[in-house]
Each structure stands twice: as structure tokens, then as C-alpha cells.
Length: 148
Image (cartoon, rainbow, N blue to C red; front, top):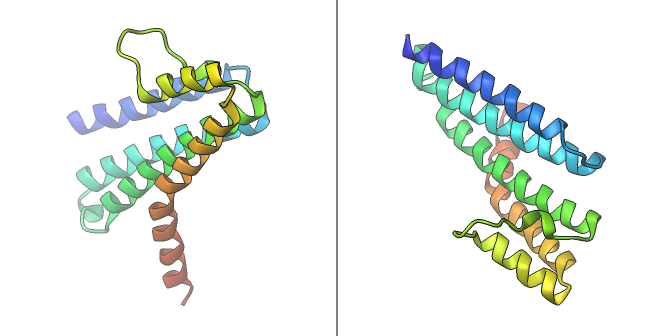
């Protein structure tokens, strides 16, 4: 019974997060990257759930693909943050006001003060590619194996 509660939670999480992304006022590329990152994250959760609870899929490597999709989602998210920073020519959306601020928020503060927002965006894009590369490499090699 608990397995079905998890999958319902995953679907509801996907609906709520997609609604939150599409209700933002983003331009085309930023919206596309945000939606892609969110839906890849939900897909990775579904891969984890399927690999854990469906008996015939337990030994099919679905957990590995779930992990790869999770890192692809994170890489896409960082790529999208960098892309949005460059296109909007601002880093103010990366700054949060809480007492425990992240390294990205502190870097955005520094970039705003020194007028380096495009460079921070390029750095986020490069970090996103760095995070997504192993997953992309895995998917490309899997597609190459399936083609032969």
C-alpha cells in the first residue's frame, strides 16, 4: 500500500512543480530549460520507484538510469540558471534573504556588486555541463549499443 502512496506523491509533486514553473514570467529558453529540469527530476523519481517496487524491473538497471537522470536534471537546472542570468543580464534572482545563504547566493551578491553577472552565468552553464556530462555519456553509449 505504501508504494502507491509514494507514486501518487511523485505525480502530485510533478503537477505542482510544473504549475509553479509555468506560472512564472520566464522567456522561452528559460521556461523550456526549467520545465525540462523539473520533468527530468520527476522522471528520475519514477525510475527509482519503478526500480524499487516493480519486481520484473528490479534488476534491469533502472536505478542506474534514475541516478543518471537525476544528475542530468541537476545539470540542466544549473545550465538554465546560467542561461537565464545571461539573457536577463541580472543575477538578482539568485540572491536569497535568509540567514543561511548558499554559495550561489553569495556568488550572486559578489557578481552584482562587481558587475560580473554574465560571467557567473557562464560559470553556472559550465558547471551544469560538468554535472550532466556523465549522464549524457551514459545515454549516448547506451544508444550506440542499442543501434548495433
